[in-house]
Image (tube, rainbow, N blue to C red; front, side, top):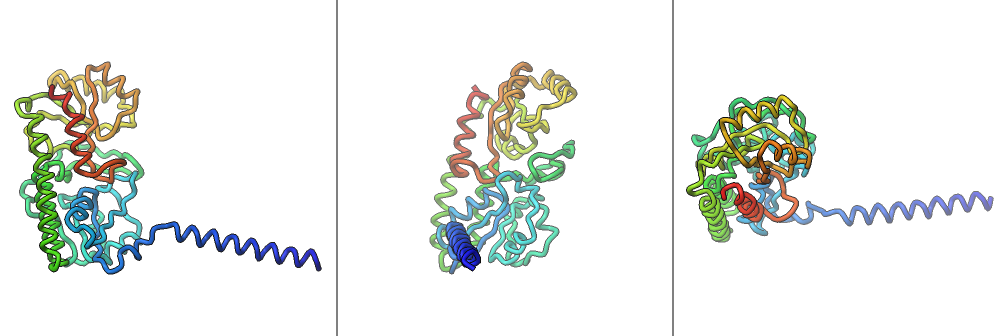
Length: 310
């Protein structure tokens, strides 16, 4: 009997410990619903739109960008419960230009959707000769078709931000003055970024450059760069055949610098150096950066690009 009582007491104590630990775990997790209470919810499909919406909307809106940090948001497919969150949002901001194709396959309330690049759809660029490949956990995909990295042209980024501002004004007209003020400051920052890039490349536009990925089309087009793109990943060593093709292209396009989306593996950097090129990282910032924000990352991109134009 005594042994039975001890067993019961132990079970009760264990249950209390588990209950307390579970309670602490739940309490330590951020309660997004509580923090969003009373605010309009805005869901976005990439980090630039998150940044624009937060800069413009301030504390008046709750902005959500649920894509995992190790996924390319352009090719990410949300889980059903995440799709439901988009469906329940007060506003959904799309990048347009075929970005996040999953949005075309699910039911989203049309009146709550805003395509932030629709106003300049006639300026979309096309990517040709891109093969299917994979990087990250998102599976195979192709970069062929419409180039969707519109925000890499600061002037187009301004147009997207203005569309975000207009959508927020429609959602919360009582805060129009605040949104206009915030948009003005954001535009000043984006124009300063544009000026910095322009100053960097002016007079050096013909400098041959190679990009590891076809994501810099709008950036190259905006500043008239002499840029050719490969389809290489920073963590995957190109095949011997790819290196041979690379050498052949360099004969006709004598670049000394390759622009990467992320820091290439040391073995790749060494081999690239053997082929006569150095590497420079230009973060497209489609997903949330590890450090800093959109403007800060782009300012860092300016600094990292300087050696390529000296």
